[in-house]
Every structure is written in C-alpha cells, then in structure tokens.
Length: 185
Image (tube, rainbow, N blue to C red; front, side, top):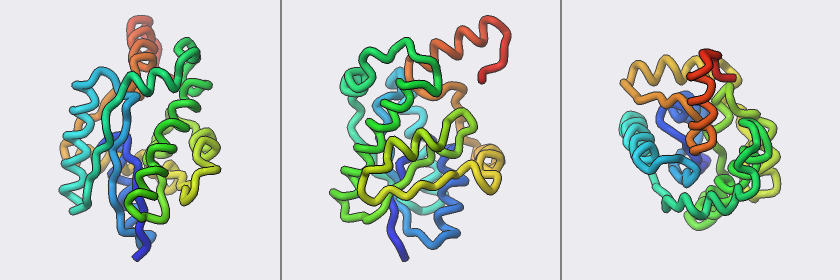
C-alpha cells in the first residue's frame, strides 16, 4: 500500500476524504495541525470529533502543536481580507508547510488535505499553496460528491459540524452574516 499523510481540518471533512483515499489504495495517517482554529475550545472540540473518525476507520491520528500566535503572525496584515481572499491563501500555505514537514519527519512520501472537500474553499487556491511542497498530492475531495458524502457520514457517526471555517475572522464574518439574516457564502 502507498502511504499518505492526510492533513485534516475536522472530523466531518475527513470522513469522505478518508473513504476516497482508502478506495485509492492508501495507508492513511491523519494529521491534525490547525493553529488557525479559534478559540482553543473549538480546536479541542474539532480534535475530539476527528478522533472519533480515526477510531471508526482504525487510523492513526497525530496532533500538531497548537500555536495560534504563530498563525496570527503568518496572516498579519491580512486580518481584514474577505473569506476566500489572501488571508485564506496565507493560512493554507502555513498549514500545508507544516503538513509537508510532518510527512517528511515521519518518512511518509505523500500528503494531502481534507480542506478541498468544503464548498466554501477554493481547491485551486489550496493546490497553489502546496504546489512547491515535496510529496503534495492535489486531491479535490469535492469531486465524486465528496461534500454530500461527508454530510451523510457525519450524521451517521454523530459528528459535531461547525458553522465557520475556524479562525476568529471567519467567526466574525459568520456572526455578521447571521445578524443580517443572509446566508453565508
């Protein structure tokens, strides 16, 4: 079997991504490294639900160090950027670099990310952020009804589904949208 490190943002997004990688013949190690998530109790809640997924699929889960201040430094000056803008690109680059380092450290030749399953993320932006990193495999997990499958599997496994990307800026944007009564983009 081929080995791959799967950078995972949360349990729900991981479900269909894992199923696709398993179908493609991969031996998967899950890597949860998301210092962008705010507040820390949200980070912990997502980690708890990702552990449920790892248990369901009998996969190893490795957790990176939570360093929100380091992430804030990586997106400094981009705080007022809109969702899907330059701040998100910097965030993707930050997380993909850490995933590449972890894959190399563990001797896993390839890595990818669950981030592409979300309809709220631009897969090409993620691919661009990781394009020069060794071992990156550009899976677009939206394809083959990946997001729809993740919804079904999340319900099946009783997973917590968050309603914002993860950082305090996306949380603030969600709150503004919620207050105005408009649906989030």
